[in-house]
Length: 121
Image (tube, rainbow, N blue to C red):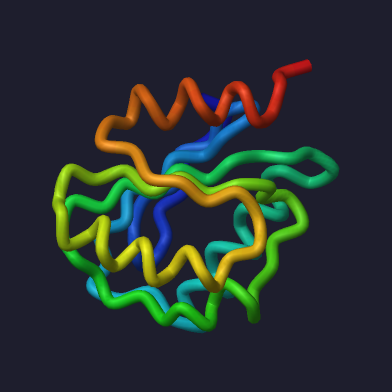
């Protein structure tokens, strides 16, 4: 791991080609998206990454954040959960994101996928 950040809505662990976001907040809206985007774009300046969001329970996510806060670094998003309700929510969010966006039931699967999306130099 390169660095760990504690954000208002969860912990962000940054690795060379991907970041794991342990989403613990109750909601994710414009304020949280601005904080997240600022941190990730500062950390991955001039590099691409995949964001892996770990969600174990339903969260309130404003789908408009996907179009209003575009990261310069994030090229793909993976959501990890084994909760069917989260899968249904993510399906709705996916239509608001223009990049690669997929769902996994384990963190290990998401990391393997992320490493194929962005290669480590």
